[in-house]
Image (cartoon, rainbow, N blue to C red):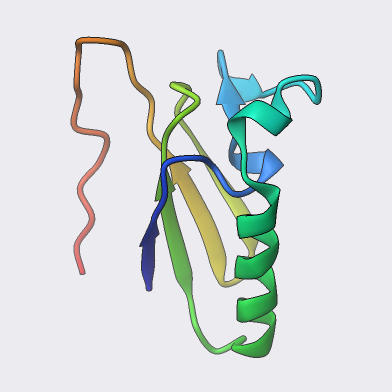
Length: 89
């Protein structure tokens, strides 16, 4: 499954200047409730794999949250849209 969301759902997927954002900014740049809901759902369905695509932080990165859960955070610069990556389904 692929899920698209604006804000990163996990601390590990919230990037700033090549590193995970500091704890002071996480409440503004991630959605912990959505991340928790994703984890709970996949805990009930361990045979499923989920890829989350998000943005919001402008920093790009990849986070493997669990064996069956990965998050790709797209980078951005105002006024300069860029193709982040191509997925084959």
